[in-house]
Length: 567
Ligand SMILES: Cc1cc2nc3c(=O)[nH]c(=O)nc-3n(C[C@H](O)[C@H](O)[C@H](O)COP(=O)(O)OP(=O)(O)OC[C@H]3O[C@@H](n4cnc5c(N)ncnc54)[C@H](O)[C@@H]3O)c2cc1C
Image (cartoon, rainbow, N blue to C red):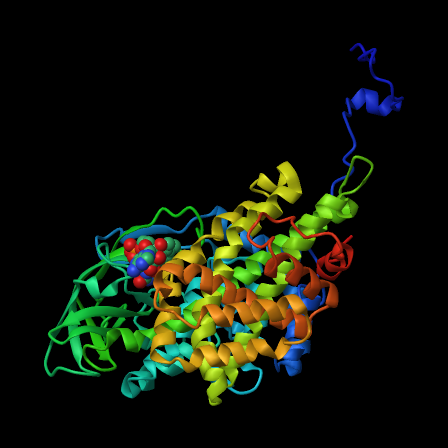
């Protein structure tokens, strides 16, 4: 065979082996994969927040978990769970109704890890100082591996305060809910040592406005709390439909009530709640979400008849808090990917992370991420201290404000981080497309943006002291920065008359969130972070695209603090 002749334009002098093998190029100027790193040790803001908000005792456990979460094998689980969507089967091969959803083994492994680490249970089994904070830190790292499977983890965790409202049901279910193990088998709960819990509120004609629900509950015998009913109706969204039981809203003669509906009946027969199909979602694909019919499904009333919303709202409040953790985690992972890439990638003669315009973008993304984490961790501390009136009032107002703001800031953050990586950031073998597709979901479920703003108004109207608690907490930073002081005074002034709050709600809630975030950063973070946050968010630039930090800020310090050092 004749050897290939070098082309005229080949200027390099390849070895004779290269010529023979037709080697076309070397791979260079590409970052190493961001893997085999410690998500805790490489996250300064997280370490500081854990210590600050009362969970220093959990540090060594979190370090261990951080190493696990950053391991290449662990990261691969997230990819496998998303590349292999859940599959639904109505019946087995003999024709028995099964309502079986099959998941990739990676999904089950992620569920096992989450439950073995008590992400669904630890603040309930070991309450007290730092319990919610430590769980939040771990959930934050776990969610960075894969966010979708966190949905059933959150629902199981969040169901506990609501189920405790009906002690005889709690006596049957609580120990299995809180067991730190995962049992995915499609079996009656009586045959399992651990269970997961979902929720079924939304119907076609009413999601935000659940009062429009038409599903009906018929008492089998006696009526009232703890009694057995049969539910007939349809639910438009039921996520994690393999859960062992669900909190369901349905109408009785006295109005909307809350029920606990098991997957199987106590006699071992299948409870007639039947999945119709799985949703074809643009994001959150590793998690199954379904539409379901309730055809006389057995369920027990939880809490007072006709008071279904107040009963389930405790669960909803906890799921809203977890949305804050999940979105903060999404931003952290996006930032880690972007800053890591730019630290290793050069263009036009210099590293991207050292080029002024890219520095502005990266530092801005870092500010958003750290502010979201600081806010979330402060509310975690509040959840640990609900016996204190200030903390109770603070959490009541700060939860809808934070859920609205942090979740809403995430999609644009993900998209900007993707752009920092360039074309490779768009590819499915990079985590960025998954982070981007996941990013709008938290903003929509568990009460969409406007609904959070309206809940903020409800809190202000029912308990005006919540606003005092919020302002007094934020005002702890008064005197640290003149821009902050002006922002605080103006916002307090704007709250003097809230008669048209509903129309102005987004603007007011945006600013409440920014006020608290800047207060937390001023009190606790690196001065470069606090200064740039105040300069860009509290002054006229706020609201423009990322990359709008004004001159005089210190992007290099902000980027250094935020960038994981790998490779
Ligand atoms: C992936 C996914 C999984 C889900 N899983 C579950 C689940 O497991 N269980 C469950 O019960 N539900 C679930 N949901 C449903 C979710 O909670 C609802 O979609 C959400 O509450 C919004 O309800 P909706 O879709 O009916 O929209 P709508 O209620 O029609 O709202 C549409 C828009 O109008 C706004 N809006 C509503 N009222 C007002 C108002 N008064 N003023 C101004 N704006 C208003 C909302 O903020 C929203 O932006 C899931 C949704 C998704 C996307």
